[in-house]
Image (cartoon, rainbow, N blue to C red; front, side, top):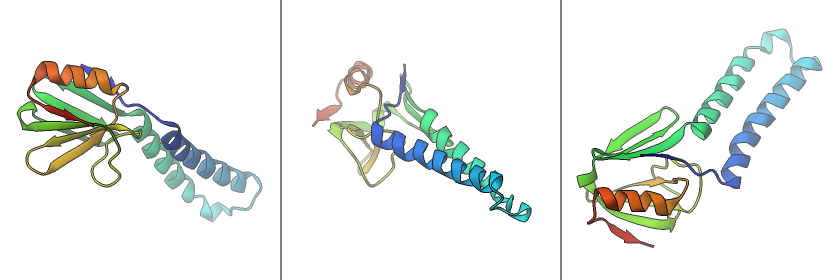
Length: 142
């Protein structure tokens, strides 16, 4: 089952605002003649950064299946087998660590002994429900 990532206002403002500001400043500089033609090399860099940020923004999702949890956030992707997952912490935000997520108040998935990953599915409840269907002995905490 595929779960899209929830997108909160803060994350949207940061990503879309950064892209918009970079593009507006670059295009305005070109149109007003404030940029010399030998400075146009910055345009592909600005466009590349914006495309990468938008790839993270629109390309983040999670899949749950019998083989485990698969996550994808732009070019970052990975898989965690179900038998390795031990606990899910609901409603917390992991500020430091691995975060293929686009929102706060998501889920911290703990696996192996000391590993954890922060994800933000559209609805935490439906993700947890599906996870418990696949593996019922996962500890759920808040």
